[in-house]
Length: 313
Image (tube, rainbow, N blue to C red):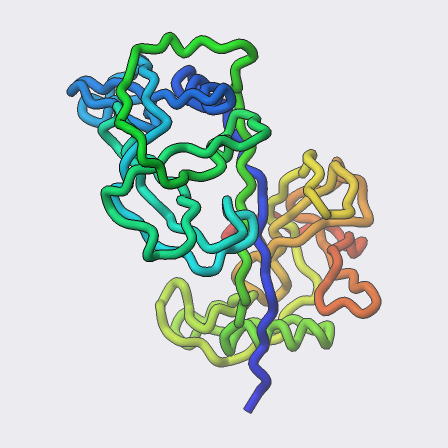
């Protein structure tokens, strides 16, 4: 029985967005220990605020300040906090309807255990010591026995408003390829490229998927392709990626390996970026100890005719 391949995989990127006037006021308000909502067409106060009315879809901007106290509407206990979660000790995820609001805000509640949490309990905001204009300016909620507050109109004006945010996104998981991709990866380790042929349409797919995406039937006939191929299309990358030691600009291309009916993508090297072109003939470059090609470089052959690869563009 073949070895089952598996490897940790991390998908991580920063998500950057600009803010409209409502979201800008909301996040700037948090920096100033002020919680803002917005009044919808039906008179309900929405916290966190939205920029468009959920009923009429019209733009809304009537801001109100609500209290930093509220009521837990529902909750779930988290016994094992993960990396970068608000608290590093067990806590409750809670939906809190702040006093003066008609909707609930999702955040965390610092509590000694699940027995200390209940729907309907009163809580208040615990502000972070250092605030930057983000939802994390609310460090958490904590139990509170005070009287309910209310809401008052607010003009949303603050000095030095927050106009944009960067939110890191990260997904950690263990990837286990199936039969087809395991064979593909094991072949790459031997500096070979294998695909699988569809028994119906006879197309060869690289990397193999275990089934034909056109016919929907299983594939198991292995076919060695390449190693050379043709650039079918490409893009020039001008933004340097974090933790990637490649100087910009560089080119990423779709490459149709000889004998394959599906283009794979890889970096093009060994040629100035502005000389990469459709039809360029390329071959893989392996580095010592690598399990896959580092990049592809020109073979020196004449460019392929467009009719040869036009179906793979």
